[in-house]
Amino acid sequence: MHLGRTTLSKFLIQQLQDAGDQGKLAALLVDVAAAVKAISAMTAKGALGGFLGAIDSHNVQGEQQKKLDVLANDAMVASTEWGGLVAGLASEELDDPYVIPEGFPRGPYLLIFDPLDGSSNTDVNVSVGTIFSVLRHDSAEQPVVGDYLQPGTRQVAAGYAIYGPATMLVLSVGKGTHGFTLDREIGNFILTHPNLAIPEDTSEFAINTSNARFWEPPVHRYVTECQAGKAGERGRDFNMRWIASMVAEVHRILMRGGVFMYPKDTKDPSKPGRLRLMYEANPIAMLIEQAGGAASTGRQRLTELRPEQLHQRVPVILGSKNEVLRIERYHAEHASGHDRPYDSPLFNERSLFRAREFN
Ligand code: AFP
Image 1 (cartoon, rainbow, N blue to C red):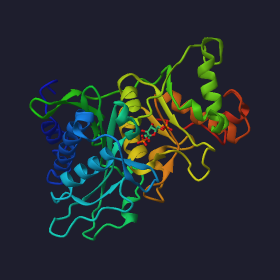
Image 2 (image 1 turned 180 degrees about the vertical axis):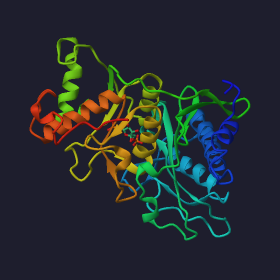
Image 3 (image 1 turned 90 degrees about the vertical axis):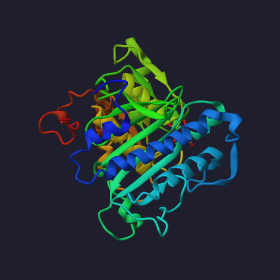
């Protein structure tokens, strides 16, 4: 790989040459990249483009939509609906899956996306992103909602764009996680961060601490220990970040390690977490795992969760492997009534609750 020279298209041809789908997955990812360039151009214009502010409509989540939410969604649909690569689309901004219009051929993939994640940050000029997930649909039939409800382990590709000081595309087709930087002058994504690897340990955590009163005990235990620093159980100081834009937090973790938590809380019992499984948690979890990190609900590997609804929410704990393992252990110890150090007899070889072994 020639750093600074390999384009996204060349990289995908190399990574998918044995994929056996006549290059359709590579072509779909190139179409997604085209939508990302359009969204990047809109976000970069800010107030000058007339793209800021909210509109008088709400999405299926009941959230008021920003102009850019809708424009980004339109860009993703317009770039991918026509090429004969997808059987259907699903979006945070669309109540139901998008049916490919008559006259456009259908293809073997389902594309699921959050067109603009972190959009509450657009009006304050903080980095936002687009998150996407690709699943297979091998039937010639029109996909129904159930066809989208596949666990994250079935993803054939996942990625995000981050619209920051630079626009970057970070993606995986199951062979590692790789970062590309947009060269605006020539309109190409150039490979700048091949084979991203998350450090197994970290001293940096990200969580919205204003929700502390709603957290479950294992999360309280973990955050309290981090805040206790050198004098506490962890014997070292920790740093905290919260940007309120998941893509920005995840990008930092992929660059230097860390742990991101939007855990289950009691703030709204009807919601087991804030983040959505299909188009936020699962694609990000694939990228994190492909970079050597871990992604969990706190109680199980996130990508093994069997989806039940298209817009369902899920608790998310992801990042540096050893910290995610520790938080899972705290959940297991709490479940067994042993919120004590790991040397409890319950956690010997015969234990019922053992931390997940990462191979
Ligand atoms: P928006 O897209 O509504 O801004 O939500 C962004 C997000 O889903 C995720 O990107 C952030 O990590 C999280 O919400 C921030 O949530 P809080 O606003 O509760 O901190």
